Amino acid sequence: MTTDQGQRFEVEGTDISYHIDEDGFRVEILGRGYTVKYPLAIYRTLDQKAKRVLAENFIYCRTKSLSLQTDEVLPYRLSRPINKELVSYGIVGDIPRLAYLSNVSIAELLDMYRDNEEKEIFKQTDLTNGTIAVTTENDKAILALSFGKDSLLSYGLAQELGLSFRLVYVKEMEELNSAEEKFKNAIIADFTAEENVSIDFLTDNIDEIFFDLKFARKVEDLENTNGMLAFALELAPFACYYRAKYLLFGNEANFSDYYPDGSYKIYPSFDQSILYAKEENRLFDCLTSGKIQIASLVEPIYNIVEMALLVNRYPKLLKYMMSCSPKETDPDKWCYGCPMCAKAFLYLVAVGGRAEQIGFNRDFFKQEYKDLYPLFNKNVKRVYEKPTAVRDEQLLSFLFAYRRGARGALIDLFKEEYLVEAEKREPELREKFLTIHETATIPEFIKEKLIHIYQEEIKKL
Image (cartoon, rainbow, N blue to C red; front, side, top):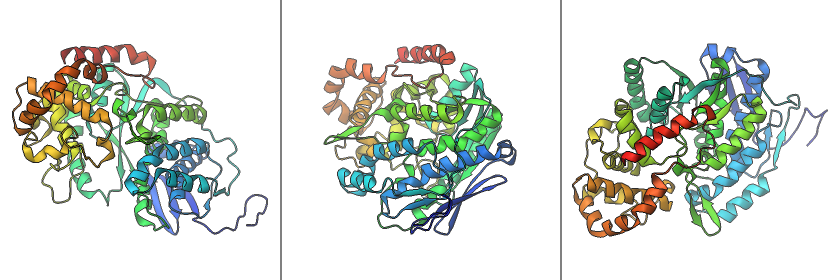
């Protein structure tokens, strides 16, 4: 390796560079290009330094995890990013999950990352002050809308709380998610017309890196590592344009649950945990001098309370809900074959909702759906269903559904084998799932009113 005044490097490795365009930026790696594109008016408001700082931190966030797939040096044509430590924190925190999905030992994957962690070079040195100047207002927010129950509930709550907010929808990997995008586009058209709102769109296909490129090792689901930080960084231009202090995400209480594997903790989505959110806000304190912050209005509540709020307070939003990934051949937005479908059906019925409210046309209390519920299936494979709390929340939900008079083979099974346990543990289960948990990121000026809303609905349960 040679150097010429810190600017010229000759190394073997996976060269990662980028180019600022009029409406976003392009990332190039191993001769392939990927783009992040904004509405032209949004991106034009950023000065050149802000564009570079946000792009470089985003690129590092999305690509540093490649260190798990290659032993080569990662030469970056960018300055050392301010988020370097947080990105490493996110990778290490996610490695237990990645190891499980990739069928390798956690210790092996951790050692691999530690060996490669510093195999990187930053070829630029001119962004010595990696911060951006931004002016925001405390009562304004950007709400990332995905049409899952968490983002729809956040929309309803933000309206009731009187927040001034703008909606953004991120189109990710459209070619790989064409079926999902087809249904989402139809939902968006109905939603914007009936709610009389507009949505800004951000297009991002950089996750295709993990599907396009061939490296020495395959690590499953690597595209989701540090995903929420990448999300926040690419939404920051909208916050700058609309002078919005808060980026509203749908990180629920259940994302802070984990399950043990020896001495390790496996989080289904570490970057959506409250631990990670706190670190994100420390980063944004430095990056924006505290002018932009991450917040989640659903942070302190579990799934069953979320669904109760939607059913009782914002029932008009239920028809837009989409929480699974249908195949191209599926006739509607629900695939009817995944645990997400089972959860949506169960929580809805448990709080007094009707399946047709979410466009659901199957009875998921039939015997054929038994294995989709962790309560009945002790050998679940998806990490999202493996924490004990998932099984316990379903135990409480089946108890509520049973008491509401629900019928079906799985209700009968619950009555025969689990009713005694559910009734015996009901106080404990209520304390866990019908409680307001930590509110680390909820803005102080709306916290009291928001907690009052939660308390009103929890009393009904």
